[in-house]
Length: 601
Image (cartoon, rainbow, N blue to C red; front, side):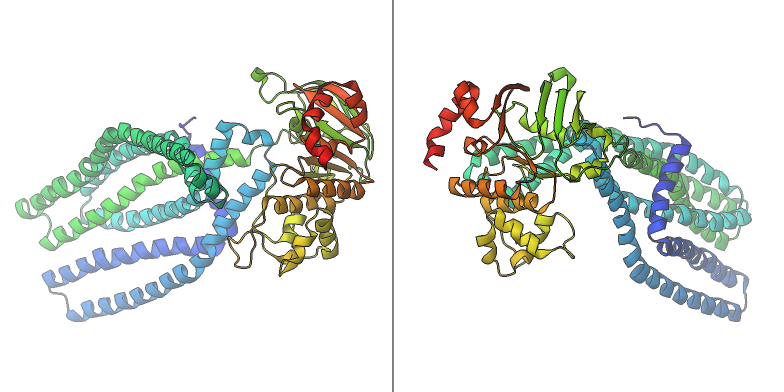
């Protein structure tokens, strides 16, 4: 990963974050900057100019009235500043900061929806994706810190610096030397910290995963019934911790040396030792400054030293922020490889589907998963894809849904390459139920719709649930289709069994008015009776639709018009259930193995 950046890159990346923040909460940004400037101006007036004014008044015998007026004005300014501070932090910040973080997160989540499925299968890209999302909130906080450092540091530098030049211009030499020394070592320190963060990221992600496994409900039963799994996870957790510790330990010595030089030699030694010697010399030996001026200058130098430390950190801090923002921008600038060539309108009714010499491989070096495959599916046909694990069934479906694109060959819908259709419309043309479906922390209604349910037709939703076999369970739910799924966030929520949840997932396909229905092991969590009832309901509900289903239970495939038997990415047998039994090939062999339990049905 490239770590060297140009000055323009650093500025562009930080401005990118600032523009997002400003567009989300402009009043907060303006008020925050004004507060930073106001605070530093008041600190200068109160702690440097004010103390200096009082000490000089005592030393040179100024009238008490002048001091009293100054203190009254200062008190009024402090009170007004406190009011502004309270308004900014208790009102404006409470609204502005969440808005900025929300906008940043929304941009990332919207982009995540555009990612090709291939990105999730690429560990390197997935690491970058996780890092970008996890760093989003931090970059908003870092931007606010940057504004604080920038405007606070500049304000102190201008006010205290001007005071310095008036009182003793030679002192600027000490300031400049400290500035240069700190700037160099802070940059070195930030590069080291960034490198450590990247090196630790894979292990921290692994540790975070194991942490989730131990507190999520999904894994609770298995972990308790399989202590060996827990022990293995503990072992991996400890290994990840050890790797993180090794990285920290390997970098500890140079981090200590650089921090020591930066904090003590470049700052404290110059200011607290060398500079005080210089001031004592001017006051006692050559009597060039008064004793009150010595106190004022030393306090001024302490404040100026603080501002210079901040100023020296501004660009390195912006550079470190830029490195993370660069990853976020790369993520946001990702261009999906699966896109619409002409964005043709997708037909609503079922149409002929053709695979023509289709080949596909997830990774070129691992060889093809699908090999020169050609099949034709006529409108409203009920097609079954069967075969042992790894035969290529699910991959074929992913290609049809354009979750991946073919490496060669074409997939046609109504005689038109599917790449010519609008991607969003095309995917909406397909109703799907996967074996690894998910239930969401939302109502039953929303889990069926997979969309905003405010204006949904509830009768159609209930009808879909009844068709999927969930009707009886639905009657037992106090709040009906408005019942929350999972009790994680709602007291009246319900935890559905595996079979019940699968019926809800299947109801999505019944509800969606799609020309093509794809069912990947739709009845894997159902008992044989429920499976039998579901299959007949599904055939009735999809009479005027094309249906493709994958199933290892061959009782389901008996109902198909045509069965495609796959092996190693090739179609090895085609025909109806009866035709394939007469063929007495691989399908017939698979059927005989399962025949006993299915004939019992």
